[in-house]
Length: 447
Image (cartoon, rainbow, N blue to C red; front, side):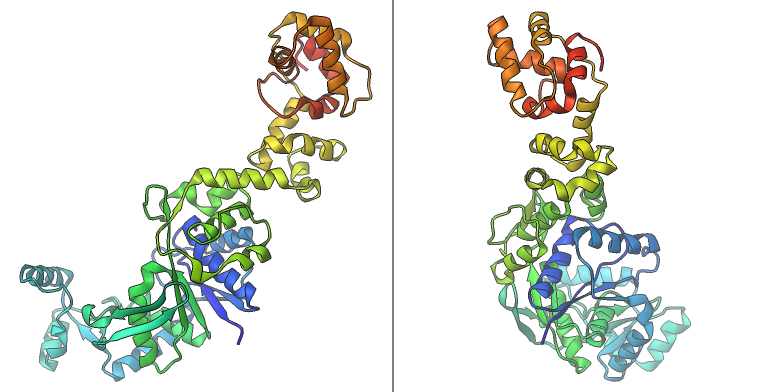
């Protein structure tokens, strides 16, 4: 059976590169196996979930090249969540608790002081009907906990191999808050069941959740999906990524001019058995993903590595691929291909091409570092048309006239022609600058 996987972000902020990892691993897993991807917005946090962030999720995924096959919102499925909760209550697996946060904290401290694990002691299970009524009369509303079976839950993890969680060491998790809203756990299970999710691929921070959720799947008499828990992207210092790191949001990376293929490659290949390298094709990237070969160690994300990947992708881009983007930067088609081939090796992002087009088209304030060389260059400047060999022929004539060679020859010419001490090969730029602008710049005029 073809897999159905899901990416289930909460629309409470902009996605960052750490979110791109599970999104891509799910999408590529499905792509390689003829499966489908569900985008499910886990938007049950009513206060923090916004329509703006929901739209941004879809935009960011589209930029990465991820087009979900199915779409769902948890907020549309409250009736199904309520039905499952009532079913668990009827089984006695979901039970009401009336402790305040302060009471729970005091109890936790007492247990730690006695050398006991700070897990919930299930005191609520021994409340009488009268005691519950008394709490209700005080204005207390219950939160609801799921009664775990004291056993080990084991599964064969797609990433980690044989895995298990000892549920006897866990507190019964709260599934419903006192205000009646759901925490993540129950809606996630109910939606996975109803929507037919076959594989759940997510970060290793959910391993303990899996032990709990497997028991909920079983209590609801549903098939348990296959789980895979990959390592998490961290900063180079080992800090966990979060939505507060705005400079690493996919939106910020896009606005900074990074290529989606560079972001995809780094998000997927970091912390895997594959060397991190630019992979332009989604199909090729899907063929490289082997969940069983993902490292158990944290995957450290280095922004400088993204810079290098991006530059390598840009340097290899053919003109046909980049032509519409150059046109949007104001670079005319007539000069487009010759210009692109001349400058691409000096670019970190495609957008930087606009800077070099300004050098070509002007105005440029020349720097006359050596008047003698500038004068000799102006006197020997050949007539047009210019081609790839013009620069070599011309600089040879200037060398014969002045005796200058190497950096002493080429740097004054570069400064005069471009106003800069660095840049693309002038053999490619000179035909684009043209004789008129070159002559004026050699004369010290802004042109």
